[in-house]
Length: 451
Ligand code: NDP
Ligand code: 2IT
Image (cartoon, rainbow, N blue to C red):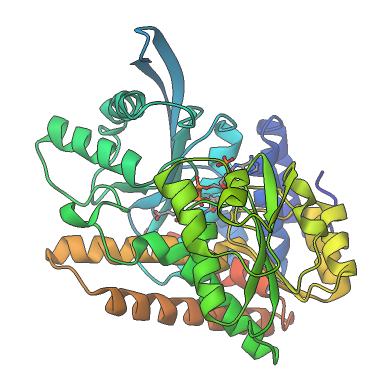
């Protein structure tokens, strides 16, 4: 699977070899690490301190991994058991921060890849947040509200002893939205007798931030817009594919439409819809947020649209811009080649690690624009950072205030990635720039703090 390997630095190779030997059964984690280490080659060669202090060997090892049993009672009275995780990866620049994912595919490899990427993403936001991630193989789909509540309470009964507003601040991710955050916050408060900003993505009535719901999707489009403009392009008049139909996808659709794009296809894990007139995000909001239904019911609202069973074919629809916003490795090499053959000018990642190494190699070979997830989807966690600030000062800012800060942060991230890429001789390579700029701040903090 790891096909793009071109690394030659002996120190980086030795760290990677030892990591592969120790974590051979964690393919997603190894994929995420290899992608970062490749970009760091010129950085490690330019400054011997990273090797002298074994910064790379330390940064690929989580500071702490917690794995726990989550027992809960379903609506028929049967006792169910799931597995819970929290990976506290790196706290060099702030408390651990990162989402919780509830999906049947969750395992240690998936949580470690997400936690590892979160270190660099959080660093890029410029806010003081370390990297972490957690979740469970619990599937909220098809469960009653009561079952979801009992699961979330059980999950938090254990997690609460490992987190706190100055220690580790979880948030949402796949399968974890406002409902789940509310149940977990309630349980934390009950057990600890503390009302604190221990989670972000909270409801507005109990400490949530305006614009956090929209932040990842909006931030993705602010980033894409900055990158497009830097390359003499814009969203205006562009055909756009947004995969997924969850939190990130819905608000990516809204902002990209506002910026003049037309979203012609969206998906869920069962299939995809095509609507040449442009998909109205409000219809998807109704289907997914209100009814918790499948995307194929879009045809009940817009009978002229088309539904295709199976989600991977979405990348064969001709488009100018692709925004994968569902899950990891959703664009493989053949999907990337289909996009390129159809004239796609850029791939802007909303999901975490949605492109396989083969897909990224194809984008690079074709010379199309590429925005890597840890930079382009950082708007969600950045706004979580803003939620933490508001909680700390016990104030709440207006939607426009938060949105303006988000836009400034995303434009800043783009500029920082572009500058780092140029400085290390890879002008225009935003992927390398993101890895390098994200790494430098964390590595500097680690150097100052000793072993
Ligand atoms: P949601 O749970 O709101 O939505 C996920 C969407 O992706 C759904 O449409 C879901 O379809 C689809 N999906 C999930 N897993 C798969 C799969 N294995 N195959 C095909 N489709 C799948 O999650 P989010 O929108 O929050 O997250 C989407 C992506 O964005 C993830 O990669 C997440 O890590 C990333 N992200 C999220 C942030 C946030 O703030 N929420 C911040 C930064 C990144 P279905 O309903 O059928 O399961
Ligand atoms: O992947 C991510 O950045 C998130 N799921 C958001 C994390 C957060 O703490 O808001």
